[in-house]
Image (tube, rainbow, N blue to C red; front, side, top):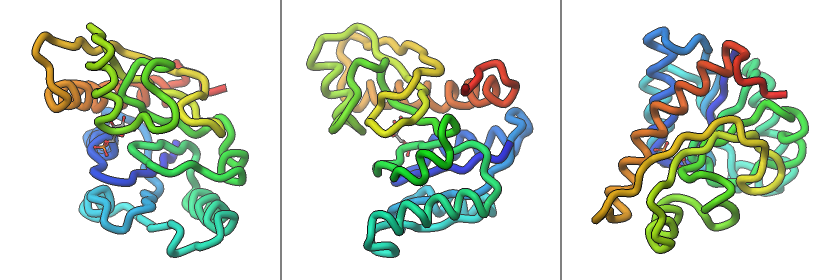
Length: 197
Ligand code: GRF
């Protein structure tokens, strides 16, 4: 199974996946890394790992339809079977969504449907969790459809919110769990133990 990863910034989840592939825990091959952000640290990580990478955004393709088609073409040309959105901050277009229907997954740092949807990304998620006085939050991996954070949930794991947590301490705990859980979930997907369709 060839996995493409789309990332906009740090790419620490992407790195966890690349590490698991490199050390043989995860039986997948990375096909391509795509970013909308030419300054994304994720691109440097991809370069260090020797993985093909491409920057596709509104500058390279000013027309949204062209951008959508370029992303689809890059995924198809690289032989991609499965697409992972790992901190990808843009919505995919209809051509890519239908070309990879049921084969695009996203990782989100909360227990969806709670603390998801438009505007719920990055530290905003953890700010909202703390403001709501939650005692637990978590990680969700789900299929991607047209809407934000709304596709079928494939796997979830809880993460405790501790007394005295700040946005930073909570974010760090959730991100650490994301790295483990993403790899664990991809292993189950690769074995067919979590069916995508
Ligand atoms: C993660 O919290 C992920 O759940 C969310 O964006 C963040 C990406 O972090 N979708 P990184 O770029 O993998 O470090």
